[in-house]
Image (cartoon, rainbow, N blue to C red; front, side, top):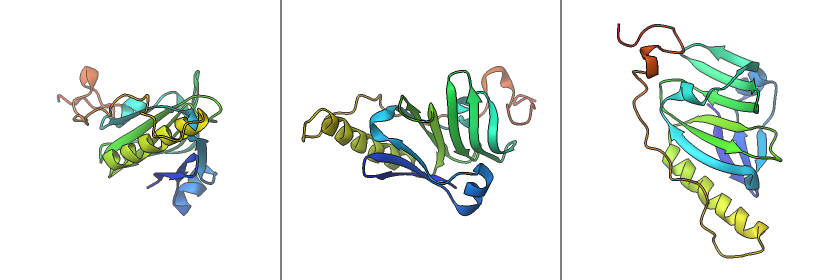
Length: 161
């Protein structure tokens, strides 16, 4: 599955060859200065907004591509209900409003991202020292079931049946 990496002053979503084919794109790159908030969630369906613009959606199995909504566009690469998702909310000049990527090492990914964002913020302000990140602490993963209202967004089946 796709993974988040830091390259210089950019956050990069690295995709496997078949993911690049499905999304019809190369690596997704955004400046670290555009990172606004980072969260971790096990409730993957909560990070999806809007409708699929391009990519692949296999309910209960795979969400991969670009989702379009009134607030902009989101890039998602998730396997619902398997692991946690790292969700990165972005501000301009990013081409996306959010990037959400499935991660087996979410806490490590968030720690690396926070550190890189702190360094980028310090460099942008002209400071060389490490500046604390202005992002909230990552949320603890919570169980994916039952969802609010008791219905799964993937299958439409009640979790309480």
